[in-house]
Every structure is written in structure tokens, then in C-alpha cells.
Figure 1: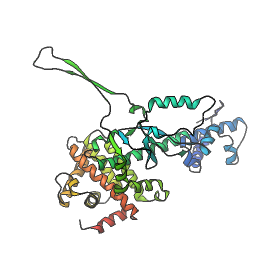
Figure 2: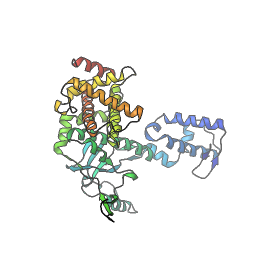
Figure 3: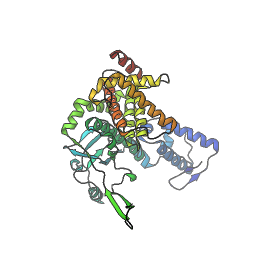
Length: 403
């Protein structure tokens, strides 16, 4: 409960005054340009400083402009004039393409194709020194994810770019799962290198080995490895993603603001994000359970007959969008599919509600991940056929066949 000025002054309000101040901050954050250009914490810190500076100058504001005058210059710059495009190294992908490809809000391409010529040099040779640091970490073939050009404060840009990167990588994971055999258990390798725990140092381990029949046979073994088996993406794969699977539709849906208010679009984007989270889980039981979240995000609109609605929708979407040779192992008919999906749902319940382990295999997860990826793509195409709500998708699937 204090107003702290960046000039060193501190004032202590009454509890009533502080509560009014907090309410004012929350109200201010809903207005433009605050709501789209800065975080709540940015607004709080800047307003707190402005209040202290006003008090130092014996000013009692009567309108918002009186307050704006005392906002810190850095905050006002971020709020009105600042823009930033963030770049990050991407692990787990090897590109055989030229130039950058649009993935959601982001661009994916090799470091060598980034042009820095438009950035002027400063009197302090800042660009020269920055380029030296960057070139030490990025070689010409390094895969780079470029976020959108976002306006706002540093914190706001970081939050927006993190979401855009996450969505783009999640989209890539869905399409890779449909393009490579047994890909799901390797999708965890697809990640931006913007967090400290995702360092690029080699992974080291050692062990002590003993042969019990021999005396004094113990010896040390050690290992060192990088993340191997990168997914290769070339022009042919990108063309397949755009024309046959639907990347061009997904990009349009993500970028076009007219889609943002549609209920089904929001559900689909959440499902895509959960798909990558499923791949990042460490055990099959949690992977299976998180994949079910993808399904429920799309098809569950109320609390009645959740299991029936999800499984009926899965049956329709799988029959419509996935060739029988790619159905889960042992499924040759829709009756088999229903039985397997019920079993998978029981696996989810056994994990979430009973905390059990050991009942889900990697094959189960791989088979179900292919179904979920196909469902995501199928729902994407339904959106472009005019379906906008979860209720409409249920009605459309019910009328499409007699399954």
C-alpha cells in the first residue's frame, strides 16, 4: 500500500484510498490502448509512479489527462510507439527450404535468410556488437521462429509472442503427426529455445555397471547426446500441408480477425495447444488424458452425456477423415472404433480419478494421437464450411451419416 515514484518519493495511502486506486487500475486496464498494448502489471507500476509524482508536485487530478502527464516516458513509448518482432531458435526441426513459411502468426525459416540491412548502426556501434553476439549462437542453417510484429510494452510483447510461438509450434506438431509414422512420441523435441531450462548444452549421464559373476568387475560408463532425429521439412511437405491437410485454411483462421468471435474457432485453437501439451507429457497415461482434453474442448458443451457425445463425434470424424488403415489397431468397423474409444476413455478415468499407472501403452497413445490430429483437421474444414458452434457441429455430424 504505497505509491512509489521513479524519482525516489514514496507515499502511503489509507486502506480506502488504496482500494479505490486498485479499482481504478482494473478499470483503466479495460480501456484502449492499455488493454492491447500493456500488461496489468505495466499499468499498475506506471500509475503507481505517476500518483507519487503528482503528489510530489502537489497536483490533484480532475481528469485522466492530468494523470497521463505524469506517466513514465518509457511506459508511454511502449503504449503508443513501440513495436517489436521477437525471434527464437527452434529445436527438433531441420529445414530444406528457402525463405520463411507462414505458420499461424509466425514465420519459420533458416537464419541465413534474415536480412538486417534495414537496421541502422548507432554511434555506440550497438548493431555491430549485437550481431556478434547473435552470430555466435545462430549459424546459417539454424531454424528460426519469428513472431508477429507486436505493438506495446516489453512485457506485453513477450506475452503475445510466447502465445504465438506456442500456437505455431502446436500447429506444426499436429501436421507432423499426420506426416510421419510414429511421430507423436518425438514431438516433445519441437520447441523454441527461449527458456533457460531449454539450454543447448549436451545431455550427459553416467552409470556403474557390474557383472555379478565376476569379482571386482564394476566399471563406469558415460554418455553424451544431443536431441537427435530431427523432423525434416521440405517444400513438398509444406505444399502437402497447405493444399491437402489445410495449413492455408488454418493460417487464415488464425490471422483473420473475423474468425476470432466464433465459439468453434476458440475451441479448435485450444485443442491445438493441448495437442502439443499432450506430446510434452512424460508418461503415456498423461499423454492419453491430455489428448482427451483436446477432444472434450471441441465437443463438450454441457455436462449431459459427455462420454456419449465425445465418442459419437469421434466415430463420425474418424470415419470421415481417416483411412481405415490408419485407425487404431484392431479396428475394422465403426463398432470396433466405438469399443476402442470407450476403452481409451476408461484409461483416462483410471488416470485422472484413480491415479493409476501402467494401463496405457505407447501404441495406444500413438493410435489415439492420429485420431485426434485428424479430428482437428476435420473440424478446421467444417469451420470453413460455415459451422461456428459446438452445437452446430454435433447437428452436422448427426445428419451426415447413420453411424
